[in-house]
Amino acid sequence: MQAYLKLDHIDKTFTRGNATTEVLKDINLTIAKGEYVSIIGHSGCGKSTLLNIVAGLTDCTQGCVLLENREVNSPGPDRAVVFQNHSLLPWLTVYENVKLGVDKVFASSKSRAEREAWVMHNLNLVQMANAKDKRPSEISGGMKQRVGIARALAMEPKVLLLDEPFGALDALTRAHLQDSVMALHQKLGNTILMITHDVDEAVLLSDRIVMMTNGPSARIGEVLEVPLARPRKRLELATNPGYLKCRQRVLEFLYERHRFVEAA
Amino acid sequence: MSMPAIKAEATAVAVTTTPPAAAAPVVTMTPKQPPRAEKYAKVAKETAVRVVPPLVVVALLMLFWELVCRRTGSTLPPPSKVFKDTKELILDPFFDNGGIDKGLFWHLSASLQRVAYGYSIAAIVGIALGTLVGQSVWAMRGLDPLFQVLRTIPPLAWLPLSLAAFRDGQPSAIFVIFITSVWPIIINTAVGIRNIPQDYRNVAAVVQLNPLEFFSKIMIPAAAPYIFTGLRIGIGLSWLAIVAAEMLIGGVGIGFFIWDAWNSSHISEIILALFYVGIIGFVLDRVIAGLGKIVTRGTSAS
Image (spheres, rainbow over the protein chains, first blue to last red):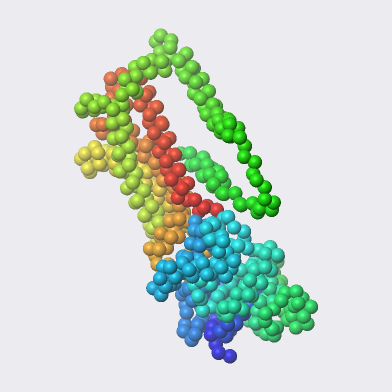
């Protein structure tokens, strides 16, 4: 497999005063171009920390992140993040929120008109073009997350990082948005790294599922290939033996071998 | 200061400015237009509900004042006498007989000008220092104790020092305005900057905004509600301070007008001047509040 994004022996320890907590221990992961990889684990296992390390928002203590064989250790638009709580700027309209990134990334490579067209193109991709002049407070949670996805996609990232992107949404909106992300992945062929705690979501969307053990010192417990053909259909998969088997494997890992012991 | 009241009002404002979500057109109906007369009647009624109660209260207070001060030997004039004494000042605020014998308009505009200078400098310096203190832990550690001590010094205590430094009334008054109103602006701006959610900082980091863009596109809008709270407290304080400062520095200005009226035992003129000072203070507060409302549109809601 050709490594596109490589997490090489990543350790992360937090030091507060004299107490040192080891959060992540020896994380190794190689992701190919166009792959959709999910990281699943119980809350507190450090999966969000791992995503922040890839995004460059947090420094790792040991090891490094390689993107196309080049080390990356600061945030940048080549690893755009879709945040869990959308993180749209409330004083900007939907259009302006997407444009903020576009203006920065394509400042020299695209003309003003091209940038505007590119913003609209990306809003169209997530079906939010007609709400372009609304402010985040005027649209629903699902719509906000669509805009968050458009903002990330518009930066043409090499890797798209999704930090529990559907966590704050109700079940129906979540399903709808999952289908949208699946369609976008199919159409654009992005490399995606997603954090999730939803087993069905992980199996439905991913090519591979990375299962993390409980912290402290969380490591990768198991990596599961999801050998389901794309495009995947939610309803058909519900009875698909391959899907059920994958689901079973993840559930066993999370609830038998690495049960969440601490009081939540 | 009535800081809690201002905050409560600010939240109320935020609630009322949230635009109603557009209702989905399920069934197309021609909306019933109420007849125009009915609409006007409704507006008139709403206005009356707001305007009548304060008018009634003011009328009652005036009546009480009139009754109390009408007796012979009363030290203060009743409202009827105030009006009679100051009729000329009220009717002709624009006369100018040279020196300090000028209409009230000139006195008030001189005071407002000093406030405008001092307050503008305070706003710029306050927001800049507030940003520094809010953003940098070391700046906060170094400067915050200093601010906390300096801000408790009463405005007039600065006046002799500034007179000594500037050797002139005008810059001294402006300095007093500045030093009075700068603290709430610094402190509120710093709190606003410190409260910028990490999410916004992360967004800025991923997009790779440079420090200048981060300041103008993230910091200022995100902290705007706090900044305007500080600006609003600041304008109130500077208007409080100017009257006191002008009493001491003399020259044209509403503060010295009051002091001069006292020295000439024109009590009615003092009362008229107080009325104007109150109204202008109120208008200044409303102007800054209105400005804040426009600028922070959408900022507080997420």
